[in-house]
Image (cartoon, rainbow, N blue to C red; front, top):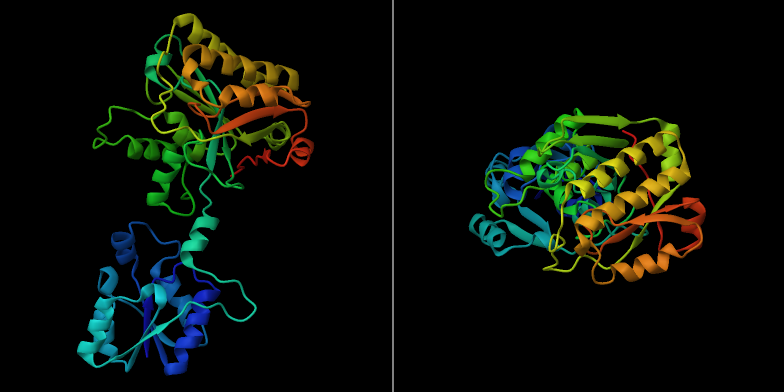
Length: 385
């Protein structure tokens, strides 16, 4: 008998499926090739085909396994025609009329198994695992937001400060954590970033996001790709260009530990559809100078691990942003600021990204204690590597 699938994130659900299918006879498995998965499912595999073949063959219910040489959802046709099995087994999710007709034409018994976990185990599916095991980081901008746009930095050059965050919490859409860039990354690398030079990777992501086919007239800022791809704390210098003239990083564990101990986030309502945070913008040299000065002060305070100076520069950066883009604070945002700025232990606040909703990113006296005292508060983990 025969089954076919990708088996990229091999899990207990696959093994139980093999166990049940093997009750119909010697089990042979067809495995989707890397190229098939790339073209049919539009993403690269976690494990290359030879590794997936090795793992499937190692399962005791499997008589043998092969890499299918066809393509698309029916990539197993040639494999079946060579093996000529008596039974073709699919799970309920893989049932289709095309497969039924295929088996009918060849006189093969077609069996559909319901997806059931092995006794005592949790139900598993590749889709569910992908949703919960994606290790693509996100980013939090600390200071200098908007300086990565040339129409801002043309007034005065300056730094943008970002930290790359481990995805240890549910990352909501339209909430200022660069989910649009992160979602584009997942089209190429669904589960984790490739092992390559972070700055080169960030530039690749930036070019992918702002490719020539983009027709909305918008160029996404480089701080998103840099903040996601470059680990630790990073600052990038913009001077009337889309890509920074220089990038500096801090991977000192003492500094990153200190920063984690003073940062957390509060969820707000997402930025609403149609919200335009650039309406009413007023970008002047003096306002951009204030933004640039605050970002420089913020970096110096972090390097000195000076909490009072960090909180002050953090507030000043946010005030400079909203002075240029007052629409960042709209809808529910001011109510959240009024509420949380009055909570003991809160020293400074800002919105990640362009604002208009999402999260309120706080500087607090002690993030562990603060998150323990406030269930809605999110503790942040800075990515080290």
